[in-house]
Image (tube, rainbow over all chains, first blue to last red; front, side, top):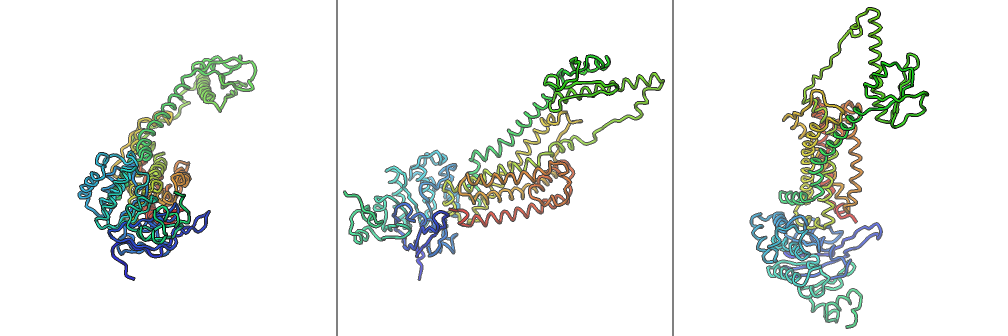
Length: 254
Length: 382
């Protein structure tokens, strides 16, 4: 099989853990999908569905138990170093250094990605302006609000602007205006031809942002496609109804 | 690697626990502890030496001359008709005479009892000399016969060597313990601390090579250990030279100073560096294994006991005469070599073995730490 040199390809991905209490836990059990450049691909699922584990494997934080994952044509198991150069990962509500300032974190991570320090510093200020972080750019992140921290984490990826963005719950705990700013940054990345894979609990966000959605439950993908595809296959209209039907629960009566 | 090192350094230098154990404890706590201990030791000794102590003496039987000498020695005589069963806190000693035999009864468990005994012994010695002198005079023998030879003591050790002896006595021991302690906070913060804050995932997905991540962490922890050591040595030397004499109960004859030559400094640093890498690697490896800060503390705290034991050997009698093999035992070798360097009696065989083995241990510990850090089941243990 020819692997595309752009985007992300996940083939029959399995990730098992051995837990002392629960025995063998199949966090991800045979997941396959493809995310293309210029596309936002959303993983939607309840807690424990395996979304975060999936994203961690793509981001080379975890190794797959079986199956293959390619990022920009690089196999995550064989060439994790190459994958890390072309990918930006945001691990949910955390992932910021509380003792560093947004400016320090952003420039250090740009350098790690091989960017010139001065150029990264210049670009950082442009992004801080765009995200409304200029005034707090030199304040330790521990003193910032949740929204400012989350935007700093997105700024870290924006400065590098890698071909692949992997975002775990990028708008978790944010108010409406901040959510909108973060979502706009994601849509801009898509416009620039970046491949974006995100996980979310928010139906509205998935519907608003994603070109395609995969509904995950208990480590497997229950359904995948555009909103139209999902509506057709489930005979439901609203994403909430579609989601609940796929995870074998019924939506409360309207 | 440079960017990683800068990130780790910025992060650790803003951690209050690390800064506290790195700067405040060695620079402030040590002088405070030594100064305080020295002050109270001196004050206690001066106070007890100038205090009038009460002793029981029989109402009759003790020659008047002895009574006078006892009173001159600041002893207040409490007359007694019968031998006391026990001594009291206010009267901690007694002097009994049985013919030509004097008996000193004292409370050996109290400082006052011991001081009273010391003064009584001095008085009796003086009395003995007076009696002998008088008897010799009666016989027409010149009293100089009592002193056929003169003994004069002179300390030929330089002030520098005296300083080295005092400073080096505990420094090796204190140094290794503090290196482990200060490095412990930094190691925990940069490994399990990152796990808890969930920044480790960001770092691992961003830095191309995982070995560079752990190498940067170990480098920063090593730097913390080395800086702590340097600050500690400065704080310790100043404390001991200016405040430590009181700990010995009396002034050091001839005084003391410490002239650490460039050669001694270099020799110390050459041993310090691989030892700091060893300490940092061991602590980073252990802290990486832990799932939480608390778990890391429970692993690293018993490690301190393992460190204290070999470090203490050099403080024990005969600890410095254990043979060449002690230069191969981690912690013990470094603790001992610092003492040798400061006391200016360095054995080059000992130094060579210590340096060689320290380099080997550092390389092995570093290799293990790098290996473990690359294993998912260690970093993300369920």
